[in-house]
Length: 169
Image (cartoon, rainbow, N blue to C red; front, top):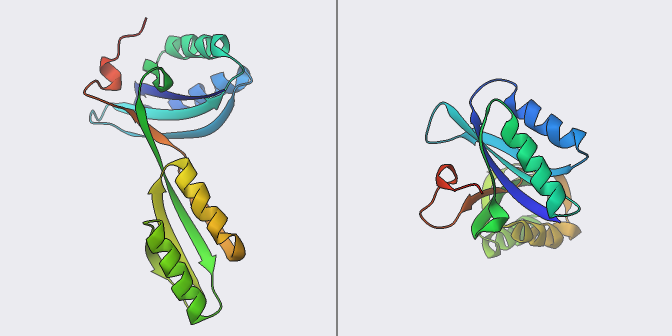
């Protein structure tokens, strides 16, 4: 089963490595992992999407993560409503002006932004759900995709409670 975790950790070198290493040692597959600054300069937020066999395996991993020295809080976002998005940048080859126009129209349909145009390629920037990104990639199957970079999912819980305010049972 796929689960979304949000971790608040001390903003120090090596913390992300410790978190990923712990999950790896427990043979938990990390599908996405990203880290970034929060509203507090001393705290980093790590968003992780993992695949686990069952809830017991997830709970054990969360318990172990929470015991790491630099981890402030671990929350399983799937326990409450949340919103998840990712950023994708896709570089596509085109051969004719008509293909470039078709790609431009496709970008418009998906609310993607063309962020770079070269003599024979263009770069699209798309934000949306994983399904939205996958749908655009399927539509681009008939073109030559030169390069793709995806952030993976970042998630926030819905409502007024931030991760730092979530009560852990």
